[in-house]
Image (cartoon, rainbow, N blue to C red; front, side, top):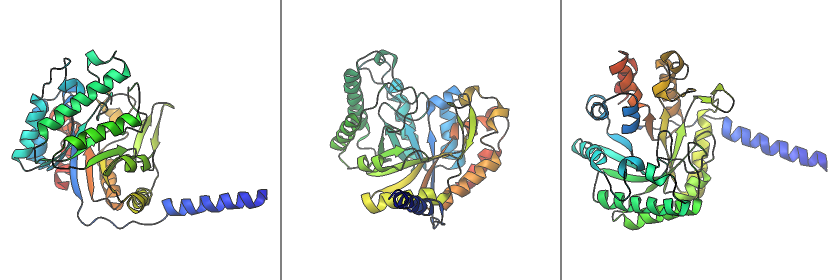
Length: 327
């Protein structure tokens, strides 16, 4: 009996290995490329974030942008919203006929992930949650009639334990999604994102209308203090997307394709000799080719602020030019 059980387990594992690691997906015929942009990240790199943003739209010709509505920027004082910067970003995208994926909630892209305003950090969780719902109501009300926003991303990788976040709550995530949907008069889809390497996206598919995945190839693992190469083949991502499509009827898109370094320190404090260990022109070219082989039809590249920093502050325009050719 033990031998039969072991044989059964071996066969199951063999089937899973073959399914997820062997095969060549069909490449998407026309991939739509976009970029992530965070004014906080641009500012932290010592850049004029508005110049950075306009360079993406006008020099690179970006027409798909994922913007982060950071809570601490939107509500620096309790009950007093400051939409000026986000208004400007959306206005410039509108003028150029671009499309915006707007990330809303507590956990939005870039460290520390959970962007608490100072006044909200010491509130009880239930009070923080009410304030977040108030913020979501204000955001959707303000941009509800903006045709440039094609989807809402509610929270950033809400099921992945990363960042300086004090709590997670799936029931609250559902409440956020329900609120956004109830307020959106144009029934835009809600996207839920998850880790490309550390998840099978089942929870994201259960909660969201669209699943967004990250895709990283070389990262620093701070728990063990070493660099890790992900050796998952393109078919690993394609098969997971196939499962999501088959059982949930949901599309999977790439919302973070690694195009900047991931090292021991935040990028603003990382020396160039450390940065090149995880991102350089050769690695970027490999990542882009890898992404094409997954069969996904849409990718948002991660690192637009850093490309501009390289060009403007370091006199290294090579990666900027590479991405410009892509667009």
